Length: 317
Image (tube, rainbow, N blue to C red):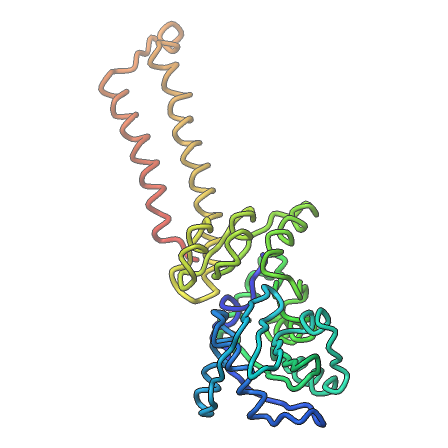
């Protein structure tokens, strides 16, 4: 069972918790927030929304951005007041060859707290950090424990770095984590697990979860998610309670058990009574099946199948 992190294990409503300026780089914390909020205003990412809201709350002046470009799985870049601004994760800093050594201790501390840290680069130099935290759903830990109790391996998949991902996974009791996965690589990770001989169920809610939902053996979409995710999934959970994932599995197992039992009864009646109707008992026992009894037997067969199916309404899940 693979869970996407953001919006699935967490509420998907991140908030800015820390704004850190790098000493000796001449940018104050407010200036770091101003540049980050200005450039993120052109992005549709949930983390961008959190930073823009923080900027509005702090009444920073949003500067005009030119040459804006979103880099999937990395961050954004643009020009603000004649300065080249890049804002995103470690991969973006490495791509731009920006040294993050001066902020290493702050970076490690924030990541170990389970926060997603984004870095601001100005003209090729690291200027500051902004940490964002997303609250883990109240039902997440209990849902994971229940699934593990059913003998199901639970895996968390996220684009966060290893330290942040490990901190979140520890909160909910997940032991195996697939971190730093780019949005377009989620389906690839699902395929890898299938290549290990596993039957994979994927739980997600976002647009970039759609390929993984479609590629998994079972795609489970959160009802609060995007239309694309819901259409790609095999199962849609109409509430936000992750305990419903285990309930869906239990109900599926009970349904399959009922189908098998219904087939047994349906074939059983026919296997026994068709030969009788053909007169197999006439020669040895002089017994013929009355047409009325044959009709009643067929009706009873249908009633037993329908009645057995209706018992699912009372199934404890």
